[in-house]
Every structure is written in C-alpha cells, then in structure tokens.
Image (cartoon, rainbow, N blue to C red):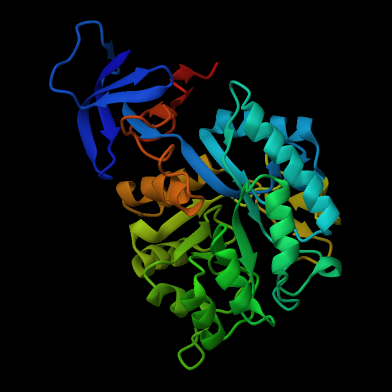
Amino acid sequence: MFYRNARIFGSDFRFHTGVFEVVDGVFGRVLPEEVPQDAIDLRGATVIPGLVDVHSHGNSGADFSDGDYQGLKKMAAQYAAWGVTSFAPASMTLPYDVLEAAFATAARLAAEAPQGHARLMGIQMEGPYFSYKKRGAQNPEYLKEPDFEGFRKLFEGCGGLVRIVDVAPELPGAAEFVAQAKALCTVSVAHTDSDYDHAKAVFDAGATHLTHLYNAMPGIHHRNPGVIPAAVENPRVRAEIICDGIHVHPASVRLAFSMFGGARMVLVSDSGRCAGLPDGSRFQLGGQDAWLRDGVAKLADGTIACSATNLWQCLENVLAWGIPEEDALRAATYNPACAIGAESKIGSIETGKLADFIVCSRDYREKRVFLGGRELQ
C-alpha cells in the first residue's frame, strides 16, 4: 500500500513531501520516484514515526511495578491511543522480588505483542541504586548501593529486557557498576547528589544517559558544576526531560536543547498511574500514598512525584515553547529508540522498519495512529 502527498518526517530528520509504502507491517519504499495511481492521497498531512516513551510508570490506574499483566496491557492500549507506539516502562525503587515479578509481566507482553497495543521494547530500571538525599518520590526503605550481581540476575531473569539501568554516581562502587553494566544495557545517572568529579567518572566509565534532567539532581553552580555540565561535556550522553510544564520550566527546556542539541535530547512523560485519572484521585506510587491535585501528582509531604501527562502532550508542549519542530520530533522518536537500542526497528520512517506512524495535522492537534501499518480504531 502506498501513501502519497504526505509531509514526511524523514530519516535525515527533515521534512520531505512525497510517497511512502507499507508492506506486511513494515515500511517499504520511502520517497520513490514513481507514484502508483492507486496510492492513498494524504492531502498534505504530516506523517511522523510513532512516539517512543522510555520513561513512564503507568496510566489509567495501572502501574508497571504492580506486576499485573492485565494492568500492563491496559497501559499499552492507552499509550497507543495517545500516539505512543513503543514504550519502555520504568520501575520504582522496590525489593528485588517485586521488580522480578514486574519484569516477568513485561517479558510476557513483549512476547505476546497484542494487536492494537503499544510495543513493549524494554524496561528502564529506575532504582534502587539512588541517593537518599535526592530520592524524590522513590521509597527510601528500599534504597541500595550499586549491586551488579543483583542487577544481573534481574536482567537475565527477564531475558535481557532491561534496556536502561539507573545509578547515582556518588554511591560506593558506582563507577565499577557502570563498567560492568554497560555491556548489558544503557546506564543512566539519576536521583543523585553527585559532584562533577564523581559524575565525570561514571560517564567516563560508560554511562550514556541522564534520567529526567534537572529533577532529583543538583542544579548548575559556577564553582560546583555537578552532574549536568559533566553530561553536557560528554558527547555520548543523552538527556531525558519531562515536559509536562510542571517538572521543568519552559525556559529550562529551551536551555537543555541549547546545551545538548536536538541529537541528544529525549522527551519522556514520567507518567504514573494517575495519568488519565480525574483530578483529586488518590493512588499508590512505589508503596507510598500520592494524590493528583490541580494536575500535579504529589506525595503526602508535598514532594512532586510522577506526571499526569503523556508523551504526545509533552511533544505539543515543547513545540509551543519554541523548540524547533525537527528537534522536538527527533527527541520523541529516534533518540529514545537509540537509548534502548531499538533504532534498527523503530523511531524513524525507513525501509524495513516497523510501520508504526502517525498521520496528523500540521498543528498536531488531530492524529491517526498506525501500528504495523494498521490504523488504530
């Protein structure tokens, strides 16, 4: 099946007007010279890859860490409806046996790949190797020092589905953990009170990701630069950022894109089970009570927790805040796919990749979602 007269976001991260083909669930020819007469006319609509969220805990009352398969399926169906066609759910700081159960449900969903649901392409293991001071909404009862053997067992237990593991650089053995774990997956710096030197050491050891930039880490200071400049200086490091308009001010989002560039930014929702629930809802987050009030999720002590948004809304936000369209789209599609090692399958409109795409209006307010070339009904 061919689609013509489309404004296509290409694999060169630029827009091209032309034609693309879908064959047996994957992209065929893109921008061919000859256009079949029976090609479907998209009348100038914008076509982008399906969004990829590599940091989301849940939605619609379900949380990945529950270890509930039906809840995870519910999450995946809602992600797809929002235009998130692939995701890597994030766990919380919890005991290993709880994480093991959650990871098993992820492996099952990834294997079954039910039609009409977002593809589960990995797991982000957010915790327990975090700083107490910068724990944020993570449960302090379950914090641990870096433990490669414990991590390796979890990794192997889910068939290697963990694609990002987080660690605070200042913890004992952090650099050694990174040096070992990088052979298995992406290692990210998160929930840290690290100084510049410890952060640089783990980036030099092989960490290539920064979890929810600005949040749960020291700010930039001219005499104590901390984690962020250490990440900016290392060209291999990508930075996630939550763009719900609550966790990070729009000016700081623009600064982040200026510092890292569009090739190194990753939009994430960091949504919790409260996403899609009515305001005033009470819910659980990592074994702690939390509330959604006026669109903001908080713990009982007032700590801002997860978000109540989704990645499509984050994309709309950054576009409204002045981030260039091509940079915003790359940060919501190809860059996150790279972060979880899935860029050969998803993240861009290229021959041979899965035909997960969105046909939308120029202002992104209207959209049609396609998974494997089939329109989501």
